[in-house]
Length: 318
Image (cartoon, rainbow, N blue to C red; front, side, top):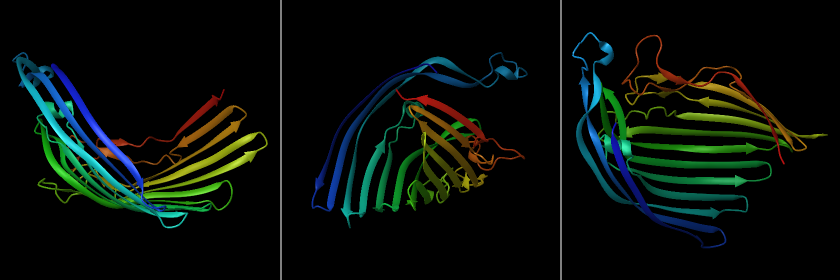
């Protein structure tokens, strides 16, 4: 690619917080931003046979610069804002709410492909939090609505951009118990239902690579030793099944992973040993984005989690 870009972003923002009563706090913010992009790009001819011989497959269907140029002139201004509130029910418990409206300008590569739409998101949160010496609870109900999402596809050898939207409703939470000094048991998780919407052909399908349920259980134990301190920790992770494609035809099965570690502080020295994926379990995080629908064959292209591994570290604090 032969291109020259000149980009400029100018933004101004305001944010403040007000303590309305001893128990009620409200905050708000506003941002206005302008993005200006000027570019000159050399055009490309595709499917060129460099030597006119169809039998030399290595240089058939080539892409070459053709000496002609096109320009990009993008100049847009958008606003974003947020409003939130927190109310203390007691000294240890409170409820909160927040509304966000945000934008995302196209990147240089988006503009090169002719995609100049601005992505927009509306977010709504309603939550509860409580904390005592023995128990901590944090729970949030959320709803997100995205519009103007570009989705890149390769159809019959062509790069095709499809604009769609999505929405998600869910709840995320964290529950921590400290039954006695040194021991902490934390359970965190997210359940969400994220679907495509709008005029896309995938409207109603689940958003790719987004599991409905994720859980993590993390015990931590701190030990005071005659020569220093030691912390034992571990994490059990569950990731639910997902789809790798917007068409919801290629399933990525759920998987579980177990990690553990120990960290010791002795004088100014810190020793740490971390074991990742102790059970050497198998799992896929995403499939092949260049394939529409289900992949064929007994094996598929996908990105796996890493197998069992160990990491040792030693540091000295001056």
